[in-house]
Length: 233
Image (cartoon, rainbow, N blue to C red):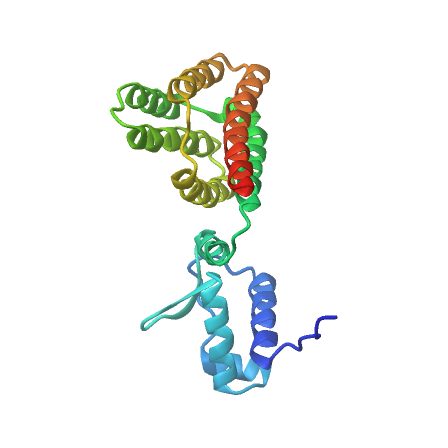
């Protein structure tokens, strides 16, 4: 049985600070009270306040700026990515890569109705540009870059900041994964991207979801097969 951990005073203050931010309706760029004011609000020492602020800073919830103090951070999930990537770096469980692909597929499939509804000429032009660059790529690495940009543009076409941030994190994982498991069938991948583009232009959500399912499932199977081969060695 694991030992029950007691929260330190600074951890309790950090949680109280999060509640304070929510209750006051503070937004990115808004200032927190000064250290002295927080000492009075919570009835604690300056060192405890500073430790709590540092903890929230490490989580990416606040920034500490010279001559301005602590301010609410812009929404950014990159801190989550850095934390989980550290966790992955000390693990040897390759099944995590399959879970990353499942997460990516779930996100991309779910956003497709929103993409078809909200995509505009600017993002259609971007998708066409990445397609052209994929067609003219002279190496697998170059093709991979435009492949990822194509899919990132799909998520950006939702014009939803939360979905876009989730996409950024997932594609950072995917970039690491692709370095270990490169695609085995570039021309098939290119044709599927073209089909995705045409389905979006036609506004055909059902067809689009079928193509994406085939497209992402094929790569999932490639990685699963490689993982199983490595296990058998």
